[in-house]
Length: 122
Length: 122
Image (cartoon, rainbow over all chains, first blue to last red; front, side):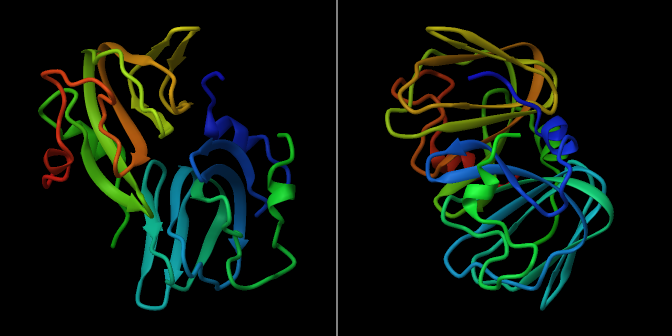
């Protein structure tokens, strides 16, 4: 029960695209991730997903448009919208999504991490 | 449906302690506020409340302890915990809380703003 710095926690991660839970907000998890390259096209049928960029540049490709996020910018991918997160260079992000949300949504790839893996101590 | 900068939106606010909704995440609102001074001792019986500091220094007094948040730091006040938010100097914050949450919780003060007021265009 103390203040935490999502940016510092994300910077300490060693594995790319492997989100870690840093907090809880009712039925949502607050997570950080270090990312580079692309994740996978996927969607979350019943859940919105919030992205906030802590460092670097993050791109969210969607079928109708692409959103580019600079540090300090956020975007909520609405439920059901297919998207593909991309970072040309290493990027630190904060995510908020329901506890039930898998970060690769309706697809499973070699990057998919279980909730248990995301709950490992930082 | 584009990237937004919570910090820029918070900086543009003219009224202190008057949160504005800048996004939705399922049954939660993402809000920004410009604050200075103290709000009021209150609690939210059934809802956690996330604070993330965009600029300045923010203090959350609780009965058992006080948490000091610097820029880029966050803290979740657990449901039911009485707290009093304070900023000695002007401070910009991002809040995430359930759509049903009133920012002054179980008390009403001259600073209390209705959800309709918080939904006004920025």
